[in-house]
Figure 1 (cartoon, rainbow, N blue to C red):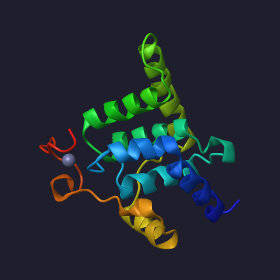
Figure 2: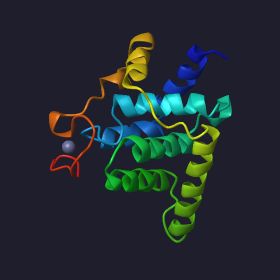
Figure 3: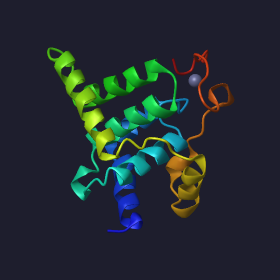
Figure 4: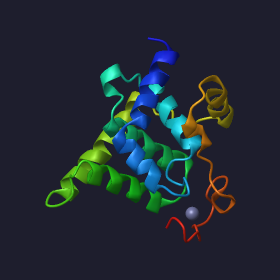
Length: 158
Ligand SMILES: [Zn+2]
């Protein structure tokens, strides 16, 4: 399979009902803007995911890792896990158990990427040009722009 095939799988995942639900609720694109989503795709490639592994679980694992490595707001990571558990209806009684499993799996994912988590902005921008998709319209409002160096003060999202 080529990158064209893999991005097709990735877009299908993004277009699916569950990811769409998540994206629609992320009003300011702070959990998943275009750079983060492009990074998630690069993570998928680095981890050499098979066709079957282009699934919701790996999407949220990679998204979490991306926030852990490239962003600085812990609350966003908590929200990502909450979304995943909620979408999968994995909330109580065993939330803690599912949370721990998620943490373990996200470490295994990182290991599959040979611990290479850094992404160059230019690589993302190349993907935007090579593979047009509506999801690349997800930019952050100015108050959330760039790397997060301080807590958000935006009332629209958090
Ligand atoms: Zn906001």
